[in-house]
Structure formats: structure tokens, C-alpha cells
Image (cartoon, rainbow, N blue to C red; front, side, top):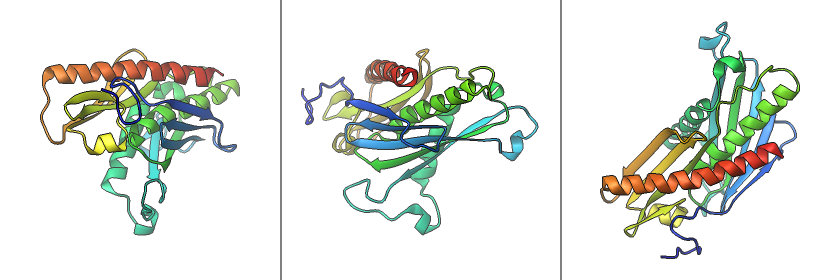
Length: 239
């Protein structure tokens, strides 16, 4: 089966990561996964959360937002509504959890790194693109701190990347674009590190159940895509 954008079932969209898109942030990238585009920026501060003060440990957190015209119809900014939606809160917590798994918080010391992920164009997979791009922004910020001898050693443990997989019209496929995601019988987000370990798996039978074999097959699809994405992350960080 060939998908509507010409990809094979196991093929992720073309991913492009452009670094240093913001002159002020310690680390910044624009990540593009097909038509999905997210700006990820890492900001470093000495103001750790209250519960970590005096502990010698740092923290990584994330904020996520979707610009009003990121989709085919304009949506109001959440700031104008006075509160974040449940979806936004869930996604930024997910990004934070994923990126904290990539770093030794004791080696980071009492520093707070905030990863801002702003979706400028959405066509499915915004949370997975945010995690993948967010890690690169984080790694670039850490690289700058090490080069400036603010940190004596690199606290990064391992790359972290994410991809969506699912079942659409009975077919298992990787990296769902919006039209595939909205029609999916099963939708799953998979986050892994460079060691091949899982950080989080979110799998939902939207309109049908799925078997153990289908689960294993979807995880294989995700792992293969993530391995390719991590190779791209390394190339961008090392350039």
C-alpha cells in the first residue's frame, strides 16, 4: 500500500532540523516533519524549583503551545482564555518527562532548563516532533554550557526521540499525518532513547482493539524510525 503522500507504510516523513534559529536562546531548532513545523528553544536559568533548592540537582521542564493559525482554522490563544487546555498540559508534561530521561540532573547542578515548543504549523505528530526537536535544543544548550566551562562535564545520558505509529484502514504505519491520525483505528506515540530503551508508550484503540502481534509490529516500526531520527539528531548536534 502506498499512502496519500507517496510514503511506504514503514516510512516516516522527511525530517529536517535547522539549528540556531533564535539568537537569544542557549539552544534552538526548527524541526519539520513533513508539513508539521515546531520551533523548540532551550533557556537556561539558575532559578530551580523550590523543592530542588539546596539539593545540588537541576531540572528540565517544557512548555508547549500551538499558534492560532497552526491549523486550517484559526484558534484563539490559550492565554486569552486565561487557562491552558487539558491537551496542552498533558503534552508539555509528556515533553518534560521525556527530556528529563535524557539528562543526569545531578551533573546538571542547580540549573533549570526550560524547553519551549511552539507549533507554527500542524499536520499530525506535533508532540513527537516537539520531543525530538526539544532534545536537540537541549543538547545544543548543554554543549554551549560545557564549552563555556559553566559545566565541567556533559550531563546528557542519551538521545531521546519520538514517533507516532498506528493502524489505519487495517494497515500498520509509521508517522501518521493529520488525515491518517484522524482516521486511525489505533494511535500510538512511542518515545525511546539511543540505547533502544522505552521511555514512554501511549497506545489507544480509538475505534478498534489491537493484538499483541500488532503491538509488537508497531513498536518495531517505531524503533526503526527512531533509530533513523537519532542518527539525524547526532548529525545536527555535531555540525
